[in-house]
Length: 282
Image (tube, rainbow, N blue to C red; front, side, top):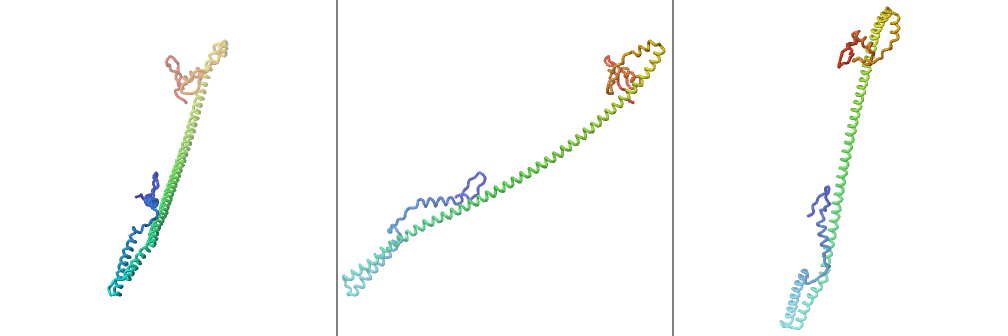
């Protein structure tokens, strides 16, 4: 028996009426043409038996009636009457054959038509069942498509939310980085300004110390004679080439020595070199 089920994914359509349809088609294709044999017809046999009984009774009645009329003696009239009575029922029996033929044909034809009508009804039922399957399959497909679209829309909204959140975090990081860079730049500017101020102060203190030294040398030069004064004026200028660690820039050795003299720096020996290091900044 065919299974009455709707098709799931990957399965083929199975009609709940296909087995009956196949059976009827086989029956119709193997149906024999109409033929009639009255001797094989049970209905004809029933009629024949009845007519034979009636014929015998009619024959017996005719002979009995004739015997009564002749005083119990047989006569040709009695025989003729009996034969006529028997022939009458034999004729009636034969007359039934065309009627029974027609009846048998109608039964054959009606059976054939009934099979055709049943096949047509099964075809309609099969078509309706297939249409229901198609409708339900399309409904499922539309529902799945709608569910897929909703899922995709939810994913898109989630992606947009994540993108918005990422953009906000990125903007916040960019703002924080900008603020950090600005703060760092301000600190650098402040350090540069502080270093410049310290360097300027050191230069001023060094210049002041140097000026004091020159004044002393000048007084000494004046007291020692004009020749020494000329040599001092002709002495070459000292170039800057000494670095004082702890403050940016380079100084002349005299400036570095003036820092040491004023207590701003100290002079130490390291690896055979003389190193000037800032001690304190005023």
